[in-house]
Image 1: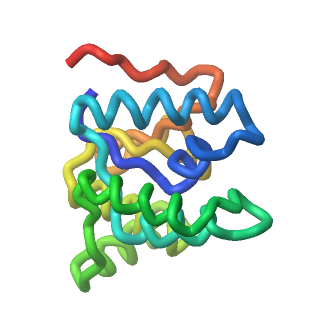
Image 2 (image 1 turned 90 degrees about the horizontal axis):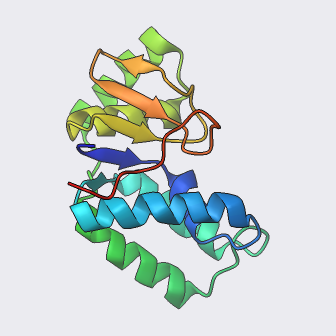
Image 3 (image 1 turned 135 degrees about the vertical axis):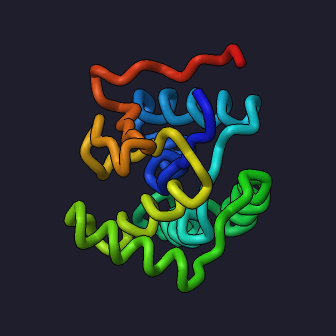
Length: 149
């Protein structure tokens, strides 16, 4: 499977009991990636997840639970923003037409040498710079994660 960058929405679905089908798929992916130590995120993902997690009309998790989730995700080596990341994101935005936030996610995945980017928000199957494939794990054509190394 290789290194896999996980967008905020996948992490949020893993904690969202209101959508049990998506929750099961997201949990499965996160579990396999954690076991294999192949999951990657950015600081942006942690910030976005925390905001969604504690929002009263979204996940509405207790702050302590959301903070514990964020602390656990630190093992996934979140990439902090810097000028090089911004430059790469601006270039991706120009070439692929991504929103600014999605461009930052894609740039972080590329910087971390991920082969796959899990996201519900981007085009399933799109290959970026011939080295990063976007996978919507909820797409009916998406394969489930493989547990074996």
